[in-house]
Amino acid sequence: MRLFYKIASLSLLSGIIHSALTPVFYKEINEDWFWFFATGFTLIFSGLINLFAIYGNRKWMYNICIISNIIMLIWIISLNIVIKGEINALVFVFIYLGVTIGSIYYRLNFDSTNHSEK
Image 1: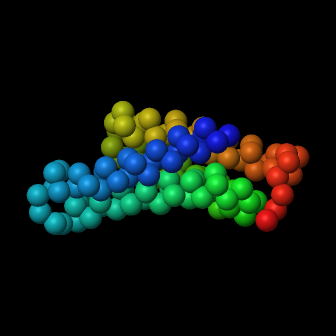
Image 2: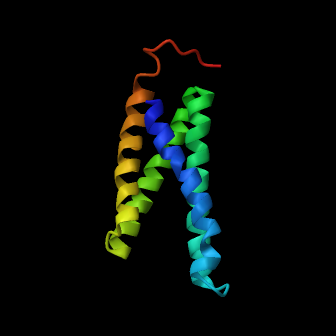
């Protein structure tokens, strides 16, 4: 399970790179500039939530992580529809599909493992 979260946590790095590249793709600050930059922040926050779930090991953290992963999955699928499935966005669909399914599976089995609610 931790592998799924580590893969999703790569979104933290991709979000930093995405936001840092905003001035390269958009020379002037406008609506498109802000949308591109905000997409990077979305990836950053999603990655942080997944990292917290890895190291927090609490039921409520997994619940928040599941909600976040579902929202990201819906957002990335919607993005793929709009941008006609560019390969980088398509890769994130599969990453978040796996992470979402994995996080739900792990949360459902949380009580049967040797975890203690802190």
